[in-house]
Length: 320
Image 1 (cartoon, rainbow, N blue to C red):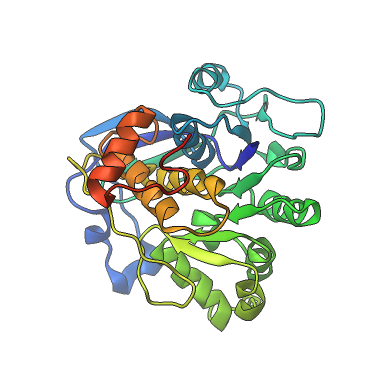
Image 2 (image 1 turned 30 degrees about the vertical axis):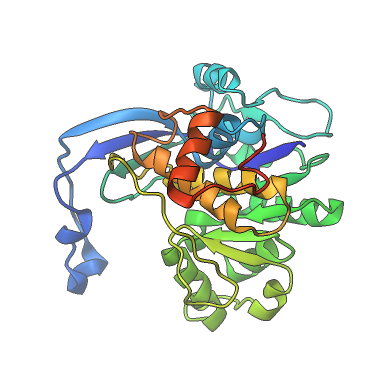
């Protein structure tokens, strides 16, 4: 089955900073913040939502099609992705439309993250609105240019392609109408707890934007979160897979998405085993620096799944 992964491609600059950035903010003076931070170390790593998600799918035996735009310095990164089993081949045909496109006008976007906090910079290439999604069994629309995300959702609805809408950090950028258009018709919507609050604020129109109609969106979607709880109807809970060590949270949510997608492919409903596969995949990422520095075999993944969640014959866990 063809899987299309859309989203950002970036280089992550991971910083080691003592304490938390938020400890230095004065709430009563947020309108005139003027701070700089001296970091102990900074590592440059390959990253971006789309490669992080696609990498987990590749580790779990799939060959996802990556549709995203990178900068003129993408050559070595592309070779690494190809070697990892991710399809980045530019296609002239619009079916299937998967392409890791290179923009000669700008470098690949950079993000800066602390191991304890995640302030990020997301410059988005103007050419990221690639050819439309076609000829695939499942697509994920991860954070990217807001206009492109809305366009991909419309194309998936038109073509009858099941899709996951993952607005992520773009919740703060997208208008209520854009969020509504992305969510409508989605098989799954994935947000973390903070992003869920932003979506709720859109419902209440607290930020002066167009409120989206939750009842319209809820007819066609199920919602999943990185940090699962039972605060809202339509959300599921999932036990976590205990990490052997905690190194870096970068890419953990993306790994969860990849594991969830792999489980969902085996049975296209929101199954317990799919969420548990996401939890195991996320734990591997948490134990390593950056979102793409871990690795495992299918047998290792299956053994760890069964260690934490018990024997199962659920589709996805028992087969590749």
